[in-house]
Image (cartoon, rainbow, N blue to C red; front, top):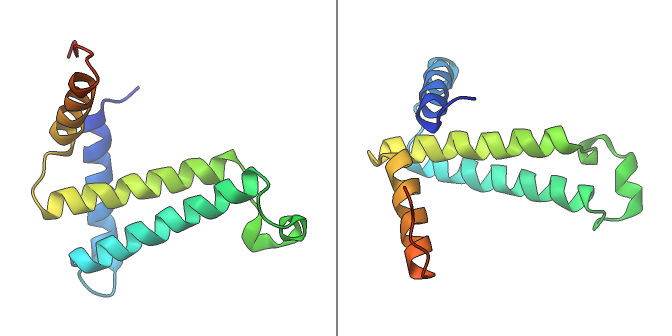
Length: 113
């Protein structure tokens, strides 16, 4: 199992590979639009997986879904989060740790990390 920092570094390598082939440099606006798109894709897969959509949609290729599709969308969202964190020079690992620590403290639980 990789550490969060290792996964962030792997993601940065992939971001670098994308930057070499993208038609133009992505600013923060493009990154936030992509994040919203990826969240929408995740929502579509979950709605299909949980059978909220019309039964007929299961026959359409663009609505086919499985657990792997949900995993892929979560990974794509993480990709976007790394890009956004790097844009603002935010240490994502520290931000996540600090937020969870604060969340636990706010609920009266002493964090042990």
